[in-house]
Image (cartoon, rainbow, N blue to C red):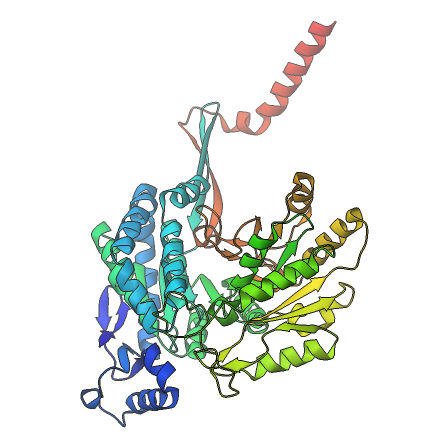
Length: 546
C-alpha cells in the first residue's frame, strides 16, 4: 500500500489521521463494502494491519491546520531564493528535467490514475497532455513571454514578468493529478507552490509531486519550501490561505457558483483569484463539415461520463446537415461504453449519483427536445438497469436556436453524458453565420469552442468573430492537447472577472518594465530632451522643404 505524508519545506510531515484510497476495481465490484471499509479505517474502527488485501491501495496523511500554516510559511521563506535562480534554471532546465522524469514515470503514473478510477485511455491522455505541457515547444513559448529586451540610445530596456510570490492550488476532484502538474508551471515564474490534495482523490497528486516534481527541484538545488503539498478538508484550508498575509495567489477549481463567491473572498483578502470553473463548451457544425470526423469529436462529450470540464457540452448544427449529423452521432455514441478501467476500450466512468442527470433529461424532454439515444442507467456490460452505476451516452435534439437556452442542458454545464444538439432554424447562410457567432459569444461560460467547416471564408468568419473562450479549435479534436496552446482557462463563468486562457506561469506573474543606463544621461535631458529633439527635427524638415 502506498503511503504519503504531507510535504512541507522539503520534509515529510506525518499525521495520526489518514485518508485511505479505494481501488477502482473493488469499487466497481462492490461499492458499498469498499466504502464501508474506507470509513472504518479513517474513523479508527479498523487498524491498517487488519486490512483485507486488495481493496485499499494507498493512504495519505491528513494535515491539521498547523501543518497547513507551516506549508505556507515554508513557501514564503523559499520564494526570494527560488526567484533568484536564473530563468535558464527555473524554466528551461526545470521544464526539461520534469519532462524527462515524467516520461520515465509515465507507466507508474498511469497505474496510479487507474487505481483512482480513470479509464486507461483517459489516463494516457492526461499523461501525454502533461508531457506536452513540459515539452520543448511549450517551454519555448513560456520563455518568449517572460522577457523582451531592446535598446534605446544608451539605455538597455526590458519588459519582464515577475513572480507574484506564494501560489496556493486547490485542484478539482475529477482530474487532480493533471491539474497539480499544470500548477507546477507557476513555479517556473519564480513562485513557490502550496497544493491541497483533494480528500476524494489524493493519491495521484501526492505521487506526482513527491516522486516526480520534488526530486527534480532537489536536483536543481531549490530551497525545500519551493513545493509543499497537504491533504485536508477544502473549507478550512482555503480559509487559512485567505487569512494568511503570506499568500499572494489562489488557483481554484470548482463550480461556477462556488467559484464566483470565492473570487469575492479573494479580492476582499487581497489575493489574486485564478479560477477554473465550469465549461459548457460549444461546437459549431457547418453545412460543409466533415460529418464523420465531427461526430467522432462530439463523442468526446461522453468521455469520463461527461465529468470533464473541457468536453463538448452543446452542439450548434446547420439545418442542412442536422439529421445526418445526429444519426452519425447516435451511432458512435452507442459504441462508447463502461467497464473496468484497465480495458483500453472503456471511456465511461461510474456515476454514483445520477438523479441530476435524469432531472436534466426530463427538463429537456418537457421543453420539446427529442431523445435520440441513451437516457438510461446501465451495468458495466451495457445492460439497462435502474440500479446501474453507468449512464448511457445520451443525445437530445433541440429544434430551433431561439428558445434553446430555456433548456437546462443547453444553458448550463451538465457534467454527465448528456449532449444537446441544437438545430438552427433555416435561413440564408449569411444570416446563419451571424446567428451562430452571436450564440457562441452570448454563452455565459467560455472555456473552449470548436468549429467544423471547410469553406475558408466561413472558417475565417468564425475565427475572426468568436471572442469568447480560452481556446478555439477548427476541424480538430475538442479535447486534444497541442504544444504551446493553453489547456485551461476561459472567460465569463469559466474564469471569472479576470478570466482568460490560463498559462499559470503568466497568470501567477506580473509585468514589470526595466531601464538600465550606464550613468551618462543627464536627468533633465531625459525629462525635457525629447521635446527639444522633436522641435529641432521639425525645424530641419521645414528648412529642407523650403
